Image 1 (spheres, one colour):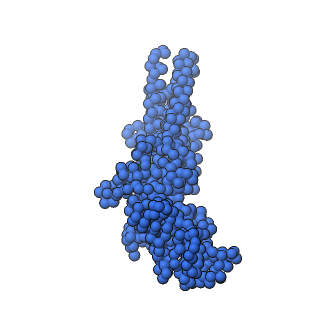
Image 2 (image 1 turned 90 degrees about the vertical axis):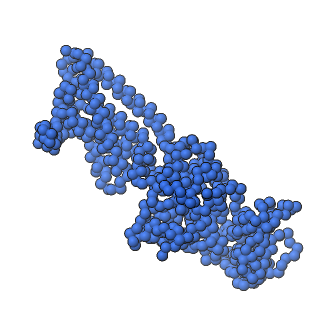
Length: 235
Length: 377
């Protein structure tokens, strides 16, 4: 029963999940990163710590609470009832929500660092050149933080691809809905389908290597004109 | 009180360590230097003028009120028509030189403004036309700062604010850039406020001076007046000097000399300094000026100008005194400063009102502007 569909379905689902998650992460993570980089609020590190929590929490702990939140008794269940479903747990939407929370620090941190590295000066220069705060954000801050966005997007994507514990807790193993790559590998091993496990695992190795290599090379290329001597001089 | 034709600044607040209390009114014309030692608050004043920093007070530029704390008015930086040049060029690293130059131009709108500075002549004047397609990282320090100046000017500002634009550059780059700043001064009608702690820069560029010390304005007015004011520290400085506006009257080709007319007299400078009718800024150091009571006849000194002593200032217990004298037999001309010994002061009875002859041993041309012509059509 090792048809091509057994292998391709989890791969496609994983790519779908990771792509959608990355897009949501960039939309949600960028304002958080900007606020963390620019705010002078004393409690901003509290927010930063909350965002970073998934880095240290066991995925099962995170998954457990997500299960409660997404389940019939939580806000996720209430939301699902709006369109006639019972729960967000064990659905693709639930996986996206879980993945966004789980991968948030991997996107927010690099973008925040990139925003902070810009420094005050280019933003001030833009303000004296008649750029409104919104204009400054889009025409100066975002382009200058490009390497951070790239790193964030790639890390967010890759981390989502590699997610296992959280998915197992909130997604289960429904083919075509929540049976993503990592779960599929686990499954193949459990049922002793070594060849399939090998194909997926080796594919992941290759994927991980290419991702890291690509990021490193792209970052090098981007920082070449992202860091003029002007900025190194503290400009 | 809305003062058109003037820059009105009145700011007060705490700068973390000392209190800033700066109030001055200067003409919205020519170059005003904010001069004082490092950390005296002059950069903070400039940043407040741009709206980058906020202190209580009021601020108006040529009739536009930019800040009035009593009325709760504060225009954010992007709504003020300022051009700002930082110590470091601060060009946008993700844009090439052309896009940097046009960043403010595109956002300043209303392209029909009368005195709008045009791209072509400005880039030619700043000598950056060959750099337009380069990335900022590929420019030298002087080139970067020229682009930054161009970028600020193309945003069509009512006033150009410059925060020690030369201080991050090495000496040879400074010398390379100064003529461009002098050209700006001569060719553009835009008022400039220039922060500096270097008196030589101020002498070359400034028309009006605002002296600052520990957050306070200690004096403001025309540069030459402040240089000869006994109540201010400029007079006692080791390199005390006055700067005077001279008009070329005649050239002596045989001896290679230039005759200038100045307020209250005439003065000869070495070298061929230009064509009759042209203006030059002349610098006369206090150490190059001495005084006699009767007109000397056989002396090698060319410049002997009648003058009237205005004041004699002794700084501490040292042997020297600074004599301020007004040129002209009736003392109606420009003021110069001479550094002499206290003994000579007593010996010649150099008191207030004394008729003297000022002997001027050296005259320097403080500005050296070339012939770049620039129109603001």
